[in-house]
Amino acid sequence: MIERLRSSFAVWLSIALLPFLAFSLERAEKPPDIATVIQGVDASVKNRLNRLAGYTVTEHYAVFRGQDEAHPVAEMLVKTTYRKESGKVFDILSQSGSALWRREVLGTLLDNEKRMSQPGNVETALITSANYDMQLDKNSMQTLDGLQCVVLDITPRRSSQYLFKGMLWVDAGNYAIVQLKGTAAKSAVFFASAAEVSRQYAEKDGLPMATHANAVSGGTLLGRTVVKIDYSSYAMDVVPAS
Image (spheres, rainbow, N blue to C red):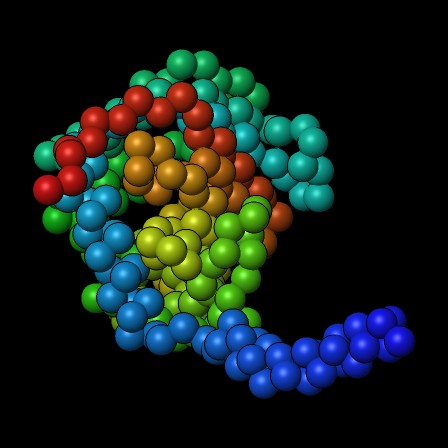
């Protein structure tokens, strides 16, 4: 008798909770408000720009040819120093492999990075609504490395070698950039021909900083070329939040 009552109560409780469960699922699956997300992304990027006075980081560059991504044809280890008032400068710590690939690919990359980081240029490359049209991706909520993210489809508002068309993952909590993937809108930052680019970020001293980048070019002149960049040993100069 007691077991029958327990069973009946369990069934009744399940039925009673169905509307609540359906309501909870509906709320969980409801996509975020795009206006709120865009405002959050803009605020996060502005916060990083305002508070990041400077940093140093060690960057390892490796160039691969064709389908072989195990044996680089050229490598370079660089200490990068960034100052907000002047941009980036590079100190090459070591290099190996083909001098041609170091000069034509890695040299071009560093020149572009230096130019893009200078005051007046950096604002034109920021991932903000001033530079991009942003829309929610059809799969707008995704988990990336255990972090709940909002996923956006982004399209440049103008043609520029520093902008790309693709996807952006931002932290669902603070809208900081977590990952980007896409194709350069004009000519690639890393190559003279179009490239598929990606970059991953992690928080350092409360600000999103690059941890890994990848670019793949399939140009007819150089063939399939891959550049991989790993960032380590950050030393940050961050202005306290006001």
